[in-house]
Length: 86
Image 1: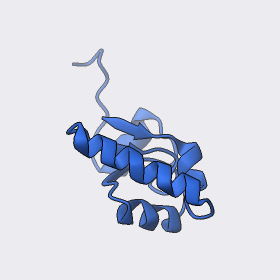
Image 2 (image 1 turned 180 degrees about the vertical axis):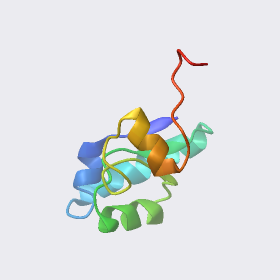
Image 3 (image 1 turned 120 degrees about the horizontal axis):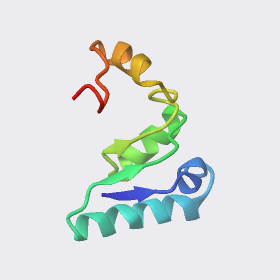
Image 4 (image 1 turned 180 degrees about the horizontal axis):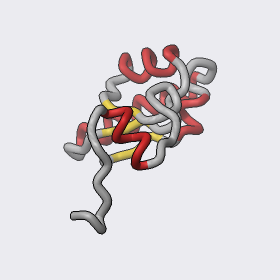
């Protein structure tokens, strides 16, 4: 897994350099047979640009805010399981 730093994602819509870096990171990931994941995706515009540049995975506030284990289970429609219970 190769992560694209959120600082590049934040500027992807306003900076040619950030877009070029993201494009390059995606190409490096492809050359190394690694998935790329974009960190800090907060807007639909960022998501659209990332998709156009070849990024298939993302994480950030656009998808969900940080959640507790119980809130995540509710969000996913299941029940929480902790390591102690496993």
